[in-house]
Image 1: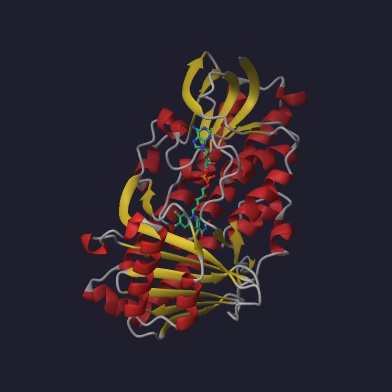
Image 2: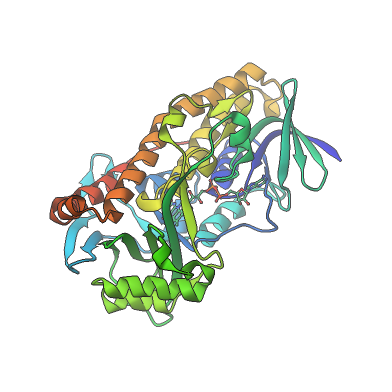
Length: 405
Ligand SMILES: Cc1cc2nc3c(=O)[nH]c(=O)nc-3n(C[C@H](O)[C@H](O)[C@H](O)COP(=O)(O)OP(=O)(O)OC[C@H]3O[C@@H](n4cnc5c(N)ncnc54)[C@H](O)[C@@H]3O)c2cc1C
């Protein structure tokens, strides 16, 4: 079976759904192809920062997310060696562009909220793109079920192993040597944590405890795996024991340990963390001949800033604005849009995103390196003043406005 579409988006993660919704708000139709049978919400929750709320507002769904998720007032970073706060940062203060807004948002809720705003039939599930070729100005997409789609524009929002990024010639993401695991605990009678992000840093790991609502708490744990971890990655039970043993050996309060003990964990026990070399993006092809990438397909990064998903939302808004304007200018349904018009719109998107994502990838890697390092000098500086600097960097990276649609 062969069909023809104007705009095809590969992947119904945050980047794909945000782009499709942004285009829909501009009155431009797109088709999202998702390889899974349903939305993939693995990972439980996202730290969703000020920049992401600006993007969600531009997409018209910010208030729906706010309604169900707690607003943080503080970020407290504890030293895992001493158990003492190494940095406390008020999130209420006013920065140049307004107050901070940081919440921990459940992944399934965020994805479903975006999906529910899309017209029926926008997402086609069980539709994996397996090959991509060009026929003149048209991209020919071969799907796993044997069907073929011919598209004027292909947007790769297909995650860290993106086939579209490969087609664009972007190099493979690099293994950072770090891994992460995470979980979500439910407290039907209330958890008792305040409106704050708690971080425990040092002893070769970095762990966060973040209440999502009055009854649920998300946690994460990032570390450098070593042979001494034994078979920890074999099962959820072994990974939980491993994390608890590491945290008990450090000075972590009992309430934080309780979150991990009672939490649900993913079947994907741990994820090796990868990032795209920032250097490869200085001149790399983010967009070319009617094809571009967004989200993790463009900028996989280590998770220490909690910005991968937030940046995917920014991508979606900027891309929908650039491409949507070009299609709207191309008359009804973009009938009159030229190849040059499409390339100019995607080129504008690529240049708007290039330096922003280079900065995010670099800052995430450096923050993680300092937070998880066991080097004596770095440890000393971290306990003395670097923890405070890192907390400020995290908040500063989120103070960004991708603009309106
Ligand atoms: C441990 C950890 C913690 C994190 N914490 C945070 C955080 O606190 N805050 C934050 O903002 N970000 C965080 N992130 C990053 C965030 O999870 C990602 O950046 C975000 O999910 C990327 O969204 P995406 O839509 O680009 O990609 P994905 O969510 O990976 O979606 C890609 C989609 O494409 C589909 N797909 C793949 N290949 C194909 C194909 N060939 N054809 C069709 N469909 C395809 C997949 O099935 C998937 O649904 C974290 C990441 C990790 C690993």
